[in-house]
Every structure is written in C-alpha cells, then in structure tokens.
Length: 246
Length: 348
Image (cartoon, rainbow over the protein chains, first blue to last red):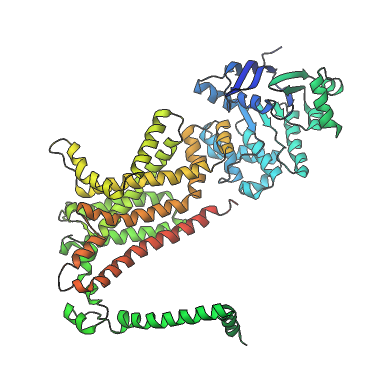
C-alpha cells in the first residue's frame, strides 16, 4: 500500500488542563473519504483543525504528504497549500466579491496571474453551480450558496486534501442538500476528504471509512457497512441509536 | 383646516404643556433674534476702514475682518508673500474636494497627495525657483493649523495601526511596548506633551543640533493622536470574528497579508466614526500649539486683536475664527458619514 497522505500518530492536545485529544492515531490514504462523527466536545473538530495547524498539538506526529507539522513556518505554509478547509460558518470575506474571495489566495499566496486565477475561479463556480453570483458580495447570498462559494474558494489552490468541519450544521434544512451534492461530486472525482458531519445518509453513500470519536479518543474506525450495521463498540452503538433512531 | 394648519395644531399646540412651551419659545426668539440680526447685519459696520467707523455704527464690526483678515489668516508670514500659503491652501482644498468623489479613488490620488505635500512645503518654505525662504518660525495662521493637523493625522494614522496591531500581538516585547506607549501617552495632557516636545526634547539632543519649533510641536501632536487612534483601531480589530483569521490562515496568507487584505479593510470601516472623531479633535487641538509659541489660526487671531484700537471688537474676530474651525470640522464630519455609506455599499 502506498504511503498515507495524512498521518496522525499518538497525538495529544490540551486546552490548559483539559485533555482534548488523547493518543489519536489515524491514517488517510490518497483518494480516501473519511467521515468523522461523535458527540459534541469529543475532539473531532479539534483533530481536523490540527491537520492544517489552525490548532497546535502538543505531542505526537502529524504529517501531510510527508511534511511534518511543527514550529517550522515553512512546513506549515507547505501543508496549508496542500489542504483546503471548509468551515461550519463559511468564513467568506464579506468585503470582497465572490470572485475576489476565490482569486485572493491563488494570486497573493501562489503567485498565479490574476487572469488565470479568474478563469480557474469561474470554472470552480460553474462546478458548484453558481457562476452567476461571481460579482456579488457574500452577504447577498443564501447560506447554501455561501457554503458552496467557500468550497470553491478552498478548491482554488488545487488542494490534495479537503477538510470539512461540520459544513452543513449552520444551514437551513432545505439548503443542506445542495452543499452535500457538491461534496458528493467532489468525492466522485477522487478528492481525498475528511468530513466532520452528522449527515449519516451522506456518510453511508460517500465514505470509505467511518471514524467515531468520544471524549478525545478515536473509539472506532470501520468501513460504513460494518460501522452502521454492527458497530463493535458500545458507545458507537448508543450514539448511532440516538442520531439515527429519530 | 389646511395642511400647515393641522401640522401646527398637532405639533405646537397639541396639549396645554406644548402650548406653554411654544409660547415661551416664541417669546425667547422674539427677545434674541431681532437684536442679534440688528447687531450682525443692520447696525454692522461693513468696511469703513478704521475702528472709528465701527464705534459709530454701534453693531458688529465686520470692518475688523476686512482690515485684519490677512494677519488672522497668515500670522507672521511675510506680508508680500501671502499668495504662497494661499495657493498651498487652495491646492489642499481642491484635492480634498477631489477625494470626496469615488471616481477619483485611483492610485493617482495617493500620488497627488504626496505631490501636494511636497509642493505645499516648497511653496511655504521657499528657497527654490526664486522664492524667498521663509523660516517655519514665521509660519502662522490657518496654513500652520492645516500643516500641523494634516501632517499629524497623515503620520499618526499608519502609526496607530501598527500600535493597535502591536497591542494585540502575541510577541510579548512588542505587546508590552505598544501597551506602555498607548497608556503613557493617554495618561498625559496634550499641553504637557507639547511642552515636553518643545522644551525637554532639545535637551537630549547633541549640542548644535536643533529641530525647528513647528516640527517639535508636530511630533508632539502626532504622538498624542496616534495613541488615541490606536485604541479606536483596536476596537475595530476586536470586532472581527475569529473565523476570518482562520479562513485566511487556512488559505495560507501570511500575517501581514491577512491584516492588509482581510482584517484591516473590515476593521477600519467599522471604526470610521471614532477615527474621524479623533481627526476632528486633532484639528481643534492644534490651537494648543500656541503654548510653545506658534501662531496657529487662533493665536494669529488673538495677535490681530492686539492693537488697542481693534481690541473692543474681539467677539467678531473670534466668531470668524470659530467659523473657520467649524467649516473644516463639519466637512470632516459629513465626509465620514458619506464614507460610511459609500464603503458599506453592496456588502450587506
């Protein structure tokens, strides 16, 4: 088997006294789709935020594409170039138009020519099906449209890995579908993805691997068929019972 | 009843209390407005050429302004060279007007401001192109007020942004220096700061090195204004959600790119009102440079009233000076309101 594109080994993290990540180990292969779920406060967001160093881990090893994350700023920059991230609250830049949101990083960080960045951005807006909104400001779009712009923005740097941190949790129910459609399309094209989400229908359809976290630990890692039908762990069973039972 | 009639009944005589208030207000106006109009217009002296004509007229002495306005506006600047500061001010006002149009918000505008500062300085200083050199000690009146206010604002603004960023920095030394500076300067009255800049600062300079008085006052004003502006800017920085920093980080923007492209454009438009408020304060505070012996607009007005023959008409002199201050401050205030609306267009 080829080397994993993401390697997390024995990672521990504390917020002051609070132990948020406990000996977390996870490997993600190129093209693999991982869905992480678990109760709130279980450390799932913190784990994926460590992958592009929005959070620092205190011990253990995290490497992306063979680059180990640490205090080395160059390594952090290199990892961020390879990893796109989509946030729960979109975090678009409200003072820039949709198109400017998309071209900012390619032009300023990657040094792409503005014209080229614009055509890439327009192609991505086509892909998330909102090219007609390119000239608008984020505040003029619906939540679902904003999140699709955010996905396009993350794709502009042509990342090798996409991280999704509860991308549909802040959306009105009728807008969840359009965002999940875009994510499924991305998965079908072979993008390596780690999604923190409670959309179990999406997980069943798209995931190669399910990860269940509780109290800072990875409790269970399994393919979706096994994960949903016969979870090995008692806590996984209870959690699934709660969120699917309704 | 017709419409005005209804309006008057509803708004002026709607209740017994309203009726009493309306009558009282009318009586007050009757008592004050006609005498004021009589003083300011009908009995005023409009240019008899001497204080004598004013005494005869009995009303406002606008003759004072006709006779002494050049001293009030230009202070000790050589009389036959007054066209130079006048031209500099005209250029300044023209550029100010140009900056009020969004169409003019192009890179050339920044260049034009840079050019204005150079051209205006050369005009005021002289010594080139056959202009008689004029030392800054002779500068005075409105040009001096504008030079100190504009330069203090232009220099203090970027400095204050650095201070505000420094105060939020995670680097302990930078943070400590910024906090120390802001708190120290905010804890001092401007008068004492100007006095220190003017009197104490030269004591620390090596012998033979002197810095001109106007420049020292300018440094004092700048340091003072920057400390207050920094706190206004910090308020804006604190209002920016954490998600904006995270999104910028995730895209790989550096600290300075994040600040310049993402955070400051949003933070600064939030704090336009307090920032312009500070600009207005700075403009009016320039009148304090008189304590270090500079003749700004107010001090020059005072000097113009020094002549015993004109002294009885100080009210007219100060009214005129107040009107000049008001015009500039009111412009800034309106400009800030317009700017707020302008930058908010489309974003929500």
